[in-house]
Amino acid sequence: MREKYRARRELARITTLRRVARCGRSSMNDGGDVVLRYSPGTGEDGSASAGFGGLVTCGSLWACPVCSAKISARRARELEHLITWNAARGGTVALLSLTMRHHSGHRLRDLRRGLSAAWRHVTSSRGWKRWKSVLGMDYVRGIEATHGANGWHLHIHALLIFPGDVTEEMHALTSEIWTRWSTGLRRKGFDATIAHGVDVRVGTGALEQLGRYISKLAFETSGGRWKLGKNGSRTPFQILADALDRGRERDFALWAEWEQASHGMQQLVWSNGLKAACQLDEIDDETIAEEDDGGEFVAQLPRRTWEKVYPVAEDLIIATRTGGPEAGRAWLDARGLAYDHERDTSERAVLLDEPDPPFAWLRAALAAEDPEQRRERRRRYYRTAQTN
Picture 1 (tube, rainbow, N blue to C red):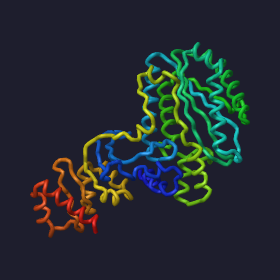
Picture 2 (tube, one colour; picture 1 turned 30 degrees about the horizontal axis):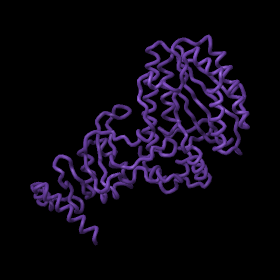
Picture 3 (cartoon, rainbow, N blue to C red; picture 1 turned 180 degrees about the vertical axis):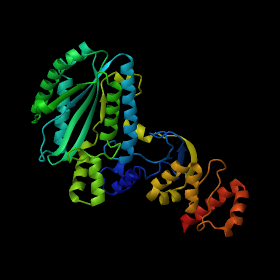
Picture 4 (cartoon, rainbow, N blue to C red; picture 1 turned 45 degrees about the vertical axis):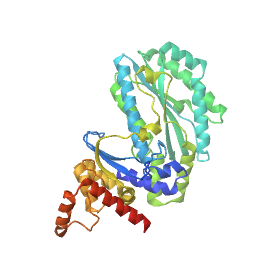
């Protein structure tokens, strides 16, 4: 988590996307306040979680390390639900992989256009539609991107969903897909080999294992984890990490190319009606990123406090997640940062140096003070500070 938050902050300086530059930094509230929240036992591994509410989010699956992880986690859960639903009705799944030849001279934007056009050629063909009708086939299509010695490499992973056993028909279906895929690529000036261009693996007897693999794929390939590519290749987020760590111009240029060429690209596309059939609601990436995870109100941070917290925001989250709400408030107190607490809306921190015994009497007096008096004193303080 620390790496993702740091990367998002540093990304704000170099990104070509304005919305990404504001993500996690600007408050949506008129006064600039930000809310700190805590949830026990809601993390991926059952551990506690913490986070901020009231911040602008970009919802960029491809370009934001923090939003990407949140979105990818939700998409992974959706795929796990789909696998479970299909298994319960006695269905079969297959993993379809489609690749294309590429070299270092290919621009990423051209590769994306070629890939998308070839996929449309597959799914709009009469052969595909016939098999879809005969087998009751649905799909979830994803895109994975890496960069290596031969330049950018884009390929498609599609989870094919069937209501029954399709083992006997799989060879013919694979042949049909290869014919349409290769034809679609050639129309855009690309090609593929039959040995590497198409691969279909049926999940017979391993639905649960395949489901975990697919959900892991959705989570990792879009940046849910800072995953290294295979055989020396790098994922886009690894390129970003290397650019920030090493400062190489080539990596910055590759990242800028990725931001522009991936803008608007969908990571997962479900066939029409599939989400409704398995009783999942449609929700876009931006909405997921904007969702407030809820949890216990820990503190409301005024604008001046948030400006000081932002450069080390992950430290406050880690403290709160590890030690709970009291640890989060103690972190703020130790730094002399003002905040409001939900229980009495009072100012729980005194703008003094590090706490020490001589000021114990003052803290006791403040604790006995009427909450409304404290709020008014704080308002006067900030009005005076802003005019100076």
